[in-house]
Image (cartoon, rainbow, N blue to C red; front, side, top):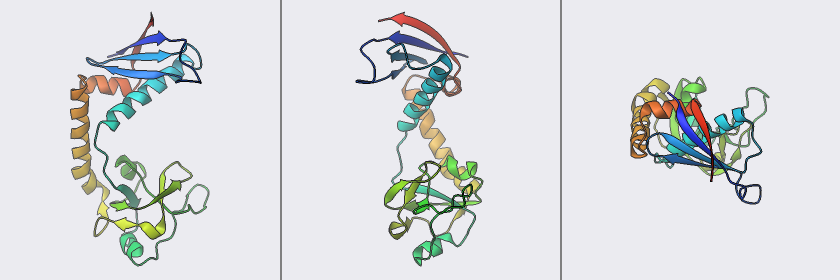
Length: 193
């Protein structure tokens, strides 16, 4: 399956305004507006796929907390006692300025963690991998103990995927169209405005 993308060249777009715009259309199609320069075709494919994924994720309600992945069952106790240390970047061996967290559930399983928990705190920046970092003195765990990642996935993961499916349906798309779009399976048609 290929998602039709109508490319419209709009000379009014550019650095002074917007470099591009992606418009999700009912029925599983997309309109892409751009000035006609600035991206190669393979870059357009990735850009459009990313914009579609971001759009549909933005339609799912965001929780007011972050996810923390860990292999340490005592981590919540360390936070509550004020003895938690800043996160360690395992590539560089350097400490972050606070506790690295994630704003999406997928981070727990992708990061290879055994456990996870929900936490609130004051956002103070981004870590070396671009992840949110919370101030240590502001941490508020929302769970009594870290839970196994597969247990979290079985509850919160299922609920998130159901909400995403509802957002896809509300836009007039099918799950197969969404999957094709985020994989970049497009057919391009150029159209003059």
